[in-house]
Image (cartoon, rainbow, N blue to C red; front, side, top):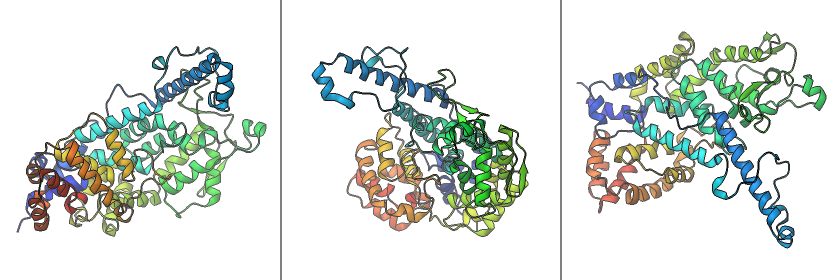
Length: 483
């Protein structure tokens, strides 16, 4: 007996995409797998094309200019305030200790004429573009892949200097390579200014480098350790502490041009040979002769193609899309496809869709908060002009945008997110009352949940005493929460 195609289509949208919109199930019902693969083959799938968004370097310079203008305003206010007020204000009006002073920059005339752009405004603009992309796509498989890899190679906007670059990091280092080669993504990520600042490599100095001999030892191992442990090989695999130290020496000199010193290219990547540790280094049994920047590039290329890396990323991909404890056969399929295709991530994504294990698993994986929020917006057809309430909901539910708690990103298991279901109920209530007040629960149910809803879920929603209550129950239904 043939399987009912509608539940398969709904499963495809919930498990691999960002949730159904009106007409989504019907649009792919004839061939759900084919529709997912077709999305991957579309030009620029997974990318965000928005000419109003700044590059990471431009964002860093704009944020710096804004902060300098504010410092100048405070200095001007201190200079014109009555003497008694100055002494009372004291340090509150003074620029922070060590703040850059630019005598060529005159004080701003008023607070509305500040130079630059506030880091928070850059952050909000990037967030708006990200939400808009998620709401615009037909299915969202490529978008989900972008989110997955952005969390795998995460940076945090809570780190000083990273906030204005966080969105650009995802657009520049992650999205162009989501359906390309893993090795290219690794190179882009590890040389991106946001990553170099986040994991402190921008200030790492080889102890025997020219700068190191002048300043004393200044090696930082954070980036080297996380590349080996989180980004490529996986925890406790084939590397040792000696490998971490050697690799950290290799990538000294990978830094960021200081904005205060270069108003044209400040905030961009640079290789500084004065900071680079000279000499041959050994990483995982292989020697790498000193070749400046290329020495590190060769190590990254080797790590990107390692069998341990293939296993690590295959397991994470299967766990993210299918189950906390994915079938071993699925992980093996993905690992082998990674190795056979030399890290072609589009081929790996297609192997995931083709694998029977990826469809046989019952929907038990709890959607992460942002997936659920976007799913609610898509289901009801709501597209808010102001993204701040959405970001506040992300914060409340424990997944603030580009602000993971640690370099290993947000957790990807059910246990982490189960405790937040009561907060989701609060968010669902507010959403149903305010943002989606005009949505028809019956239509939303039929278009997004009916093919996979249990009889109990259908009865619960049908018994609702009001439209907002029905919509809240729909958004909190197990079939809407899980994929």
